[in-house]
Structure formats: C-alpha cells, structure tokens
Image 1 (cartoon, rainbow, N blue to C red):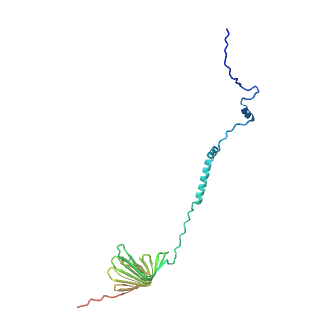
Image 2 (cartoon, rainbow, N blue to C red; image 1 turned 30 degrees about the vertical axis):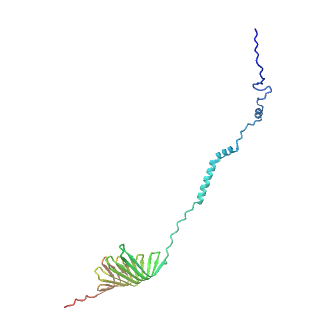
Image 3 (cartoon, rainbow, N blue to C red; image 1 turned 90 degrees about the horizontal axis):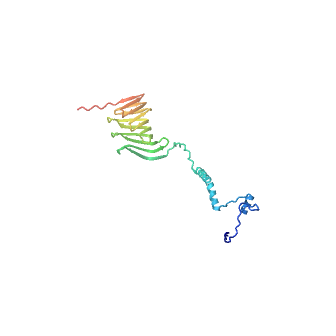
Amino acid sequence: MAVELHLPDLPEVAISLGHSPAGEPIDAAAGAASQAGVSRRITLPWHLRVRDALSAYLPLLLMLLIALATWWLVKETPVPEPPAPPRAMRSEPDYSMRSFALERFDADGRLKMRIEGDLLRHYPDTNRVEIDGARIRAFAADGRETLATARRALGNGDGSEIQLLGGAEVTSRDAAGQPVLIRSEFLHAFLVTERVRTHLPVLARFGGTEMTAGGIDYDNAARRLEFRGPVRAVFIPRAAPERR
C-alpha cells in the first residue's frame, strides 16, 4: 500500500557550502579586500586620540616642568654676599664735648667719680678719651676723696685709669687721714685702686714729710711707697706741745 506525504510549499533558499561554483568567497567584499592585502582599520574619535597621546607623553612633560622649575629656582635664589672685611676704626674723634661734667655712680646710687674739663674728645679705635683742663674727683668706699688735675689727660671709657700730662697733681688722704700730694709733669693714676706712679721727676708730700725723686710708685691700698733715685727728703718736725 503506497503512502504519500504532502508538505506545504516553502520558499526556495539557496544554500551553498564552501566555494561557489565560480571559486569566489561567499562575501565578495571581504574577499576583494583580502585579495588586495589591505586590513580593515578602526578609526577612534579625536578626543580619545588626544587622551591616549597625553597618557603617553605626560611623564615626559612632568619631568620637563620639574627641570624648568629647578632651573628657575636656582637662578632666582639670591647668592649670599661675602662677609665684609672689618672696617678699620678711625683714629679721629667721633664726638666731643665742651665744658662738660660726667658723673658715675655705684650700684647703691652713691657718687663714685666726677670728671670735668674744658674739652673732651672720644676716639673709637681705642675707646679712650682725651680731656683738656681735666679735673677728676674719685670717692673711695670709706668716703675718702681723691682729686686729680692736669692740663691734659688721657683715660679709658670709665675713667678708672687716667694719664695726667702737664702740671699733673693728685691729692688725697691716706688710711690714717694724713694728707697726700703727688706732683709731676706726668702721673699715671688708677683712681679706683688708689695707685699713682711716674717715671719722671716727682714731688711727694706725706703728712709733714716732703720728698723729691726721679720716679714714684705709690699704692695706697697696699700701703706701699717706692721711689726712684735720686731721692731727697725733708722732714718737718712736729710742733712741740706748749708747756704750761
């Protein structure tokens, strides 16, 4: 018995495996490109191309900027000036005073020294003063007063050391209260330590005794008196007490 199967009509579809009978690829366009040896290239948008370029060259740009900044800093950094050579001190007076009076006080406020004169000149190179018509009063701790005068005087800044030149004279009292006078053309007086010395001829009076010598070194604090020859002394006897 014969059975017949009837299928509905379907559209005809051309199906081909492999190459076509003519030997060409299925995709004609792709085959043509392959035969020409040209590969298909994908083109990126411009902003993506810029981003890729920046990513590739950014480290190099940063290094260049750092190098430029370092060069600029080195160029603009001020170079320290070499130390200036010490300025030579002037041998001329930097200030002067006329008809002056200077006073110095101790820590308790008591007058320690008074310096007067006709003209004072200060020399910065040695920090010393020169005084014309010098009159100097110094006061010891026990209240004794020493007076030094001269036509000209050279002293240090605080007046504790004075060189008296021309008609120099120092008057004071010793520890026993006896008057002391030393006179010469040059006297080197240390008023704080109460010491006077000279290498020139000198006249000295201690109480009732008058002496002349070629030089003297008198230290009142140490109670020492040294003369340089020749030495001459005149002793004035004390007046005898009156008899009743």
